[in-house]
Image (cartoon, rainbow, N blue to C red; front, side):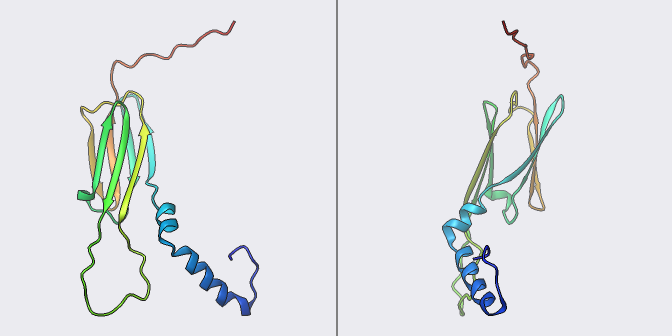
Length: 138
């Protein structure tokens, strides 16, 4: 509905439909399930920062295997039964996973720190990486 120009009479109904379609759980979960990454490199290591707001350190798993870095988050919200009912609810549970290939990354010497919703990783590069070789075109 947001692509349709609104006048004052229609806008309050348009908001209703926008809210309805934005609150669909599978669509909403899919839209927000991507872990945003920044990856920097220097000669010795990769520096990775991943935004994982709302997660606890215990809900995050980081694996590095054959140069493939995988960050997984399993969020479980247990709801205590209390008096009252929700009028609107956006907090949910679910899982997210993100993988990226880092050439020459090695498991030894890798470190991770999580604070304020940002996971910071330092991943060392292997010393025995092959030098890039150009192939001459005939």
